[in-house]
Length: 330
Image 1 (cartoon, rainbow, N blue to C red):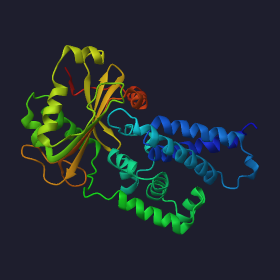
Image 2 (image 1 turned 30 degrees about the horizontal axis):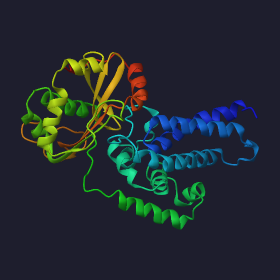
Image 3 (image 1 turned 120 degrees about the vertical axis):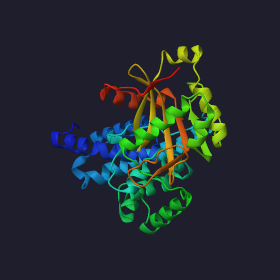
């Protein structure tokens, strides 16, 4: 059954919203694109004359496809080599979806996408549809074939699982660049002390190479240990240069709403270092910056070097050039 023009247009108008839902549910831009494409194929094959509310129908189909993927993803993650991190997405990408409220912005942060791995598929779906897209519990129940009361219980339980003592600091692009500049100045100094001053005592660093690229397979905990680890990563070496395919350039960017170092060779992104900072007073020697309150010390460093998770951000980065690096690495 071929699509009429208005039916094809209707789907294309929904594509951005569907991608944003799928990305929050799956933590993978690539998997989200696949889920949306499968939704399109089902829309194409459906008896569309009998679909009363296309938006609700598309959301239901997409969400259930994502629930199936989440179930199989849990099995895959059990055999995943090293640490798993969500796929990073560059600012301005429609995959990030609505960003009008603090809840919407928080739902797409790498910290929250990582935390949501704790949730069952139904908990994640209810939480995302409610917090990020404002669906009523009755509407979510219709999407998931659950009662309204059950959805309310699931939402409450999901919130408890995601409870955290940290308050995320929201910053603008200018402030994000300042955070990256301070981080790179410390990382490229060749000394651990500047890095230690930038990090909280209980900071955590996680790297995802996905068995494709060498990466630390266990988290690094504590300012001193992370500083030594980062000093090793940023130390020059011919083997590192050869593996990267040249001298990597270091850029400041905003990824999933937070400051990030984008590492490129030519137009290819080979790594993304995302920095989470706590609200509060900045450490000694570091200027306090931030659009909402001051940005204090960095409490999490998330390093994504798995090439499979850098394809979309590479395309977006290449399309948004030219770019002027802050520094070169190695």
